[in-house]
Length: 383
Image 1 (cartoon, rainbow, N blue to C red):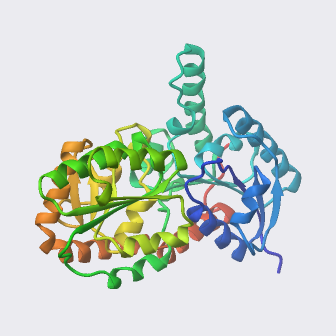
Image 2 (cartoon, one colour):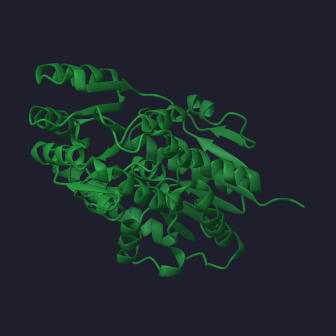
């Protein structure tokens, strides 16, 4: 029996923070369908070793204008191949639905369009174009057969922008099941120092300075805490190291460069709490971070800044602690976590239970169900 053919479109950036959620979905599709995977550059092929799929590279530079050209070429390829379904893995590819006609499409809604297209450029014309592309992205989503947001906030936002409820299915990113095995490797209550870990992109707007300044303040007030920051670029590694030395916490701060995803569980296993913090940007009010679910699945209580995409999953004094996005508040939460470390086993148990629903083995059936609905016609393709 011939399997349905699915064209899978992707758009990976040169500083792509990770491929896990894309790899999970692509591999799942390739096990169930005849997949043609479309990449923008040859170097991304290495991220999918052994994939049972045909790979097509539409060599394209990075940037907003090249991306729009890539979308046009992707749609042209889909029209030529005439697949049973076009799966667009990334909300930045939503505009492709305008060019697919009546062909069924499934759209992975993983980023808010303001993060992709909103421009802070001084020229009014560029800002206007950015706002137009944001509006067009939502209009394009309304044309997709099925839209799969990664979080509840995204789902609410899509429905607020006119998407029919029966075409919006929540499909969280999902983390590797290996994270669930980490919890048993850690001591229940640390005695020498509390280990905090941040695993993700390192930058100012992702809390770099808040973390290091907060660590210094907490240390100077008697908190015995060590902070491991994983995922820094070479430039950020030097900046963080210099900052730690200047603030007198070099011996309490470990900064690690970018590492393969397979190494992240090891860092979590050597830590007692995970850190999630973001500046309050409109797009981060919708995008829950992957590391949040990794921490929870591993049974790590989460120290999370007060923003909807954290507080929807982390409850203060239940599976973590909540703080405001500033160095003083972060220092206070580190001090609290150290002083109340006897509660770590309770917080860890709660985090672990909450996190199991985000394992990929639990998410994959929902993902495939959404794909089947888009394929079998149980959801009508919009005109």
